[in-house]
Amino acid sequence: MRIKTLLVILGLAGFVFLTSLYLYAVIKKPQAGKAFPARLPLEKPTDRKLSAAMERLYDAWNPHEDRGNEFFSNFKYSRLEGFSRRPNVSRRDPTKVIRINGTYYVWYTCRRTAAPPSGPKKATDVIPSRDWDLADIWYATSKDGFHWKEKGPAVTRPPKGKFGWRSNCTPDILIWKGKYYLYYQAYSAIIEGGDSCPVTMAQAESPDGPWYALGRPVLESGAPEDWDCACVHDPFPLVYKGKIYLYYKGSPGKKRGGDNIIRAQGLAIAEHPAGPFIKSPLNPVLNSGHETCLWPYKSGIAAIVSLDGPEKNTVQYAHDGMNFSMKSLLQVPPIAPGPFVPDAFTDSGDGRGITWGLCHINPDGGGSMNESILARFDCDLSRDVDRSIFKRNNLRFDEHTYFQRVLVLPEYMRKRILKERDLVDKDTKK
Ligand code: AAL
Image (cartoon, rainbow, N blue to C red; front, side):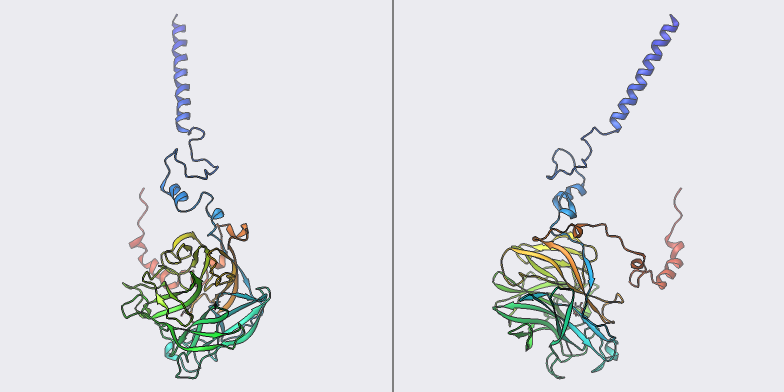
């Protein structure tokens, strides 16, 4: 009898043990179909609680994230053929590329000086203060966008004392009613830290010139307390809603930083290339970015926003050309991009997007004290191609990248870190 009872008790104990093991497994391992599925629901699921991040995947992005994002692209770079590299010859800040009768045209800042940039104090009539000082606007043509022929100066500085005698640089191109217009920064004094200058314009009947300079500003800095009170840079004209939409970078120059804005991008609109350009009361229309880069996209305007500000390294879109929102996060966007925008001036209301352009690179990673070179970037921000290589993220960089001048830890900071180490680093709590 006792053995039978014992066996029953053991059997019961075994049953309880196995049941709880099973229940634990069931409770611990989510029911198939309960966890967020690998196969991404195309619509935001409503049958489950989502984390903030997964809410955002559907609200801000899309289920297939970058690979499914028309506004996302990585960028691939190419060296250009046709531009000789010589000391103190600098090429930078290219315009949009245009193609006329099968030939690509680009204009850019070209400095050819006897000496390298040496800062405002050492600058003379032949020694530049900055990389874009003592510059003119040159141009080049190409049949394929990789091999270029430098054609020479397009717009050159007037004699000393005249408006814009010191430097003409950072151009961009507009075609309006069959004529060609170059907008550019015009300096009438040695370029100082504030980098203050107005924007002016030159026009021509043909992309090969001759170019006739207007000889006065078309866009000027704002009032002393304004966000763009010192600098109106990087003029970037597009034709939109029957008018000229001139985007530009603005900043308070020497006053930037601290409690002041550093730089942002604005918009000025005109009905004629010589102006008047009326600044948008909404300015700044982009709270970030450095050199401007925009193109018509669908019925709106898209922009690459790089380098500066909280929304740096993003592609943004405004259905009305003014109210931009972030559409993708970028890695290593081109610097001073001049995209090839076939429909920049057609005002089609059905912008097709971009696949390539030119940009500049500062060989020493700097910005203003060394000569620059032009390069080509390719991407897929277009509705007419589908190049998946450009929709990949997870870009990883080589050793050189992390230890180059602008990324390596400077010695003085290393010394400071070591000096403050015991103050900052506490023992890990056991
Ligand atoms: C560029 C542009 C403008 C600035 C200087 C030359 O990157 O933003 O053109 O003035 O730097």
